[in-house]
Length: 71
View 1 (cartoon, one colour):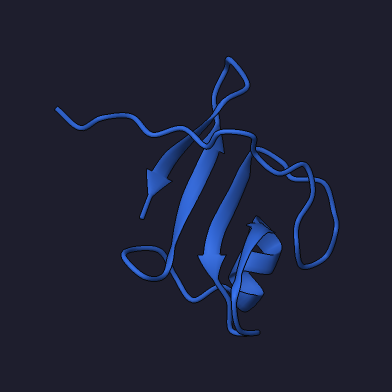
View 2: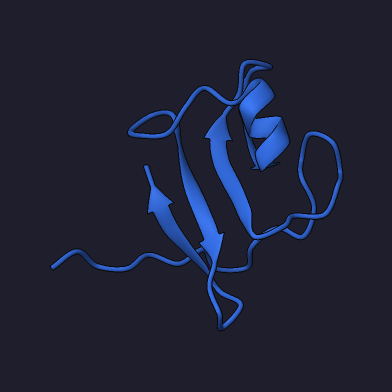
């Protein structure tokens, strides 16, 4: 069985646009260079994908924690 991974101390705002993080965010490599915690719109625009060396997707759960769901 796969172990659940939660993001400890998740970001409150996107590193790219400074908008509030909604129910999904990405810890990802960007086309701008470097890594960022991105909201979904910024990930779609600047993210390099999910997976090893690219990034992870996290979704807010009912208890408020963010569970890694991709990558």
